[in-house]
Length: 251
Image (cartoon, rainbow, N blue to C red; front, side, top):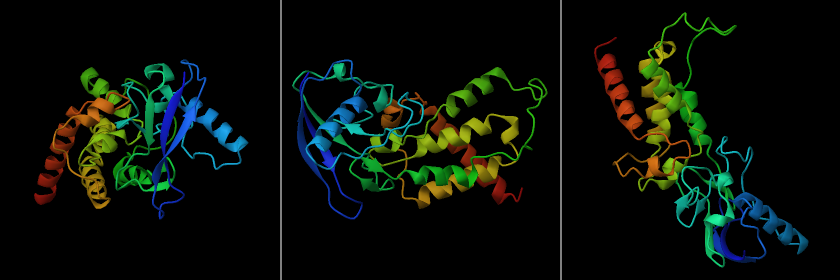
C-alpha cells in the first residue's frame, strides 16, 4: 500500500509548526500505524533528515502515550482503540493521511507530534489518592462493596489518561478524564476520607489549567479508547455539588 502523509512538524514549543508532505510506499496492510512511522523515520535517517518525533511506549493500547490526531480524529478512525492499535488496512490505498498532535491549549507541543500532558498528572496529584494504610492487602471480604459499585469503579479506573477526550471536545474539556479519576474512588468505601476534598481540589486544578467545560457533545465518549461513559461526568457534577454543600455547611 502507498500513502501520502501530511505530518505536523514543529522543532520546539516556541517555533511555529506546519504540515509537511511525505510519500511512503510498499506498506503492508498489517503494519500498525506506529510501525509505519518507524519505517518512515528509517527512510528519513537514511537521507540524513531529521526523524519525526512521536511518543509511544507499550504499543498495546494500555499506556495512552501514542496520542495523535489522524485525519481530524483523536486516535484515528478505528474506535475504540489507541493509535498503536490502528493498522494501515483501515485506510484506502493511495490515501492522504493527515497526522497531527492533540491540539489542546493545555497540552503544549514539545516537538513535532510530542505533547506535554503533565497537566493530567497534576489533576490526579491534587486528589486522586486514598489515605488507606500501606502494607499487606486486606482480606477481600473484609470491606463489602456492592457489585454495581465495584463494576462502575472498575469501568472508571480503566481510563488510561491519554487526553483524547480533551482533544476531541470542541471546548477542550478534560471532564471525562477528571470524572473517571474522581468516580473510581468515590464508588469505593476506601475513597470516603478524601471524598469531598478530592473533587474540589481536582476540579480546581482542572479549571486553573485552562480546560474548557462540558457542553454534552459526547465527542469525548466517542473517541475514548477505554470506552469510558460520559455518564461519569454527571457523577462528577453530583460529587462536586455534594462537596460544595458540605463545605458551606462546615462539615
